[in-house]
Image 1: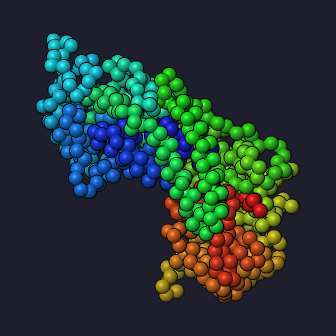
Image 2: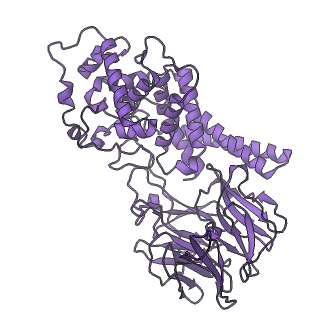
Length: 628
């Protein structure tokens, strides 16, 4: 799924719930919409960074941060509101634990408050709410439909409420199976238009969380909040909020569900419009486009927004908050055909909405997706993909510059190079080392080089002959490979003999075309990778202060201008490739989007590449054939 599409689906599914949280905090529909919109826009502008890392957590952190960090007059709550009279911090502690259903450790993460401070605020809220709304701490079956005006008598006055101390005696047992609490969130949530679903007084309605997709998976997905950490033995006096006071939780859910429709109308579309509009504006400024081109881009953006809005409406209809609906089926691409003559432009890892991802043997929904020049997409079935939390590494994949060959690691751990037009697959005869794999290839795709973190040896496959050559040394990394097989090799070692350096790297050329003894350089000079020019000598590198330099790979001499790349708050990701004898392609990042920038090494001038791949690729997605 593309960035644009999964963002619209996320907003369609979750924007109403964020607005309802804001409504409980502010007590006013207009202020709630303003707070939710600002939080969603600020978070979703970094969508590429958060889309696979608990995006709901990121939005909640932004929302609570804005609420608690507001300057000037505090957030007043209208008289008659259930939480009227509670201070902002106290209100936030109640909402995050009772309405959002988060444990204290998890609530502390999203609010930025210390667990002990949250516990103090909850105790303070209990004292005030017991005095103003005593029935909220009784049997949840006695809950009135209007939580702001509870009845004076309980439905069954002969029953005494349970002792709170007994209710909290063993919270570990009460939380033994959090998946059961989320078994049917569809019964517990309002639809996106603002109506209530089901009868909230039914048993189980008070324990579901508004942040879980329906049906709740046994393990967390990237679209849900992280599971609440278990507290086997809480400290004395630590308040375990939701299980002890189900009536209060049910009252908050009911109050949030009653948020006026005006505060929810077109919220997702508004956020999406602001996020995409900012991206278009930044792109137009970056490329210094003419007024006519800007007008064309605006027209294209409007057409794209109309299409996105239509898909968003469809996503809303399938939303887990809609009555009687289940989570939409995962869109799975067809497997890669035996032969694919069309070049691949870029690749990205898929995601599984309701299943635990296994990067070493991913399900079809989590496999690599290859996007061709025509826009067709195919999944790569026999490859590791995604992030492996066990090792903290991303599974490798690399594309040749012509888009016809790719290197990947199969579930058995072998590294393979696949020629897409013919379907021929050849293996790199190398054992995986410790650390993340570093891959480089020659511009024509004949040679693929493989290095591993701190490993002593690297390997190069000649696809034409099928032979693997081992490059030996200490802490070796192959930075680049020429079409004739010549390799740029870096060896790093710690040192105490070079003033001002804790370590140094030795750079050398190794191959049939050239072989040098090497020269020493600062290791920081190759942290963003390197690209070897068509002449086989000029090496493009980025310095520690983000300047692009051109170095003679045989002598180490630096020539030409040294343009800065970190303008407009951009961060260098890596040097991609040479586009011609004078221009180098660099990948940059502004914490929101990827920018592909071409730099003229003679003049130092830079310009946006103008390739539409920048609209879809993320921080580390492999890049293949360009549009031109």
